[in-house]
Image (cartoon, rainbow, N blue to C red; front, side, top):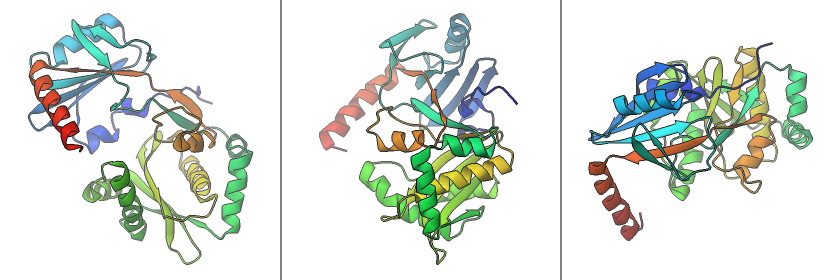
Length: 299
């Protein structure tokens, strides 16, 4: 069996950021991946460091950073804990981000190389009972790779969540493009009449599968969420995927419902390290003005 060490999917060249979200890789080497995206007149550059030395990282910051351009540099250090308010790299100072990070603080990764019996055991007694409860309620698992009623249901379920929490609704043409490209699975729990009550979207980036989005009907019977995740694991294992990334968590507080739910699915917690940001002076002035304006307008 391969060594059970999870390398973050974001370092993979076929990750969705570059294939579907407009980012371009401008440097790739051992321990470092640099990608860039233009947002209007601003260039956003993301440095993803995973074990590279400080000297080499500094050289990359000098060469590819936005110190002389209209841009924002984000430094994500996978191997660094959030212990200091900022770091100086390549002669530039980066401020620690505690909110508004590009990547989450951590994730749970399911090692699909384990046999199904061990995966079920890792699922935990409460989660196993919830799966059994869902099965007793005649819920079925459905897999689609085309824009069907299950995708319609996802948007119907997710739109109120977006409006309530101020999130961004993923553009439907983009999601359909992922489906047509065989890079996305639409996974649903359906009731006895075939109507979806939960729809999850899982991005495929072999050997990874990544929980991208999920949404449920306003009222869903207990255990259906755990049931969908368990059947997803079984499906991915059968198809030969090595890792199922549960899509990240924003906190590690036991009181956080998303964290508690994902933890109970039996994966290993992976700390995704620290993230820092540097805004070039011209952008900083505009950025500060827009931030104040947004606060004044309460938007």
